Amino acid sequence: MARISETDLILNPDGSVYHLNLLPKHISETIITVGDPSRVYRVSQYFDDIEFEMNKREFITHVGKFRGKRVTVISTGIGTDNIEIFFTELDALINIDLKTREPRSKKKKLKVIRIGTSGSLQDDVPLGAHLMTEYAVGLDNLMSFYNLPCTAFEESIAKDIQRKSSISFTPYVVKGSSLLMRQYGEGMVLGNTITAPGFYAPQGRAVRIPLKYPKLVDELSSYHNKTNDFWLTNFEMETAGYYGMARMLGHEVLSVNAIIADRHKNKFAKDPNKVVDSLIKKVLESI
Image 1 (cartoon, helix red, strand yellow):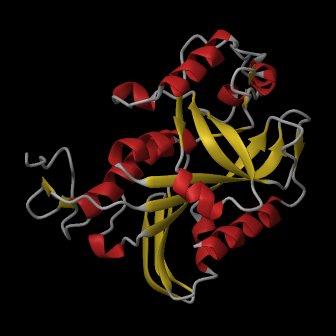
Image 2 (cartoon, one colour):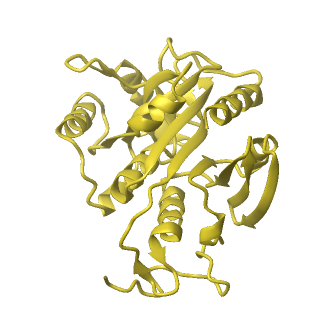
Image 3 (cartoon, one colour):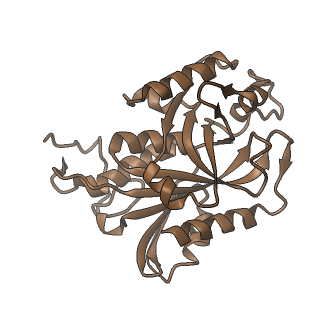
């Protein structure tokens, strides 16, 4: 197997991966991820104990046990560019021998659950709901730099979304882990999530700069592939990156979303922290 160069996979002097600043011993079989670094503490407060903490840039990590099971929780910051960094280095920690810089012959598979916040596009996905993403639709360009294998169904939906909207490019569509959907899905809305490459214009928000696609939110909320009864349910900024990287690296990943905004009615949750905390508890109870 080819040795991975020092510039392709950068390590710190202590042998940890460059951005996460973690060693293989810090990685549990189950990983919980959050975007907001402060949310790591809101997850780990429920742990029986915390054995390890690391703060590096936006990547904050706590390792501990919940009801006797070892869990790692990591913050990723915002956007699919950060998800690429997170997933590449996470996979390297378990599937590459960091001393020889060679891929391991036997690959390990992780379970990664993203707990995020999101805005609803549909009336039947109300404020306060917990939504589990079946398919993610990437409006970002991360997968333009990878050969992401997609099914015929995923490719057909991607082309149909472009055809029925004003966007000038074809998005990518990728499904999450069916295994984790069965494990964590009880009591959640099943949806199809749009991953945007920004918070403002890419999600139809205008402050002082005019929008190139002023009808985008209406187009996406009204999108319906009748042949497959496929709707778009919510907006956020990471899920498609998670699902694409997981498919290429061979891991199980699921994104669950606390719905704290209603983009259709322009309403925001009065107590978003309550919605997020209840989702955190629900995920931990299912581990």
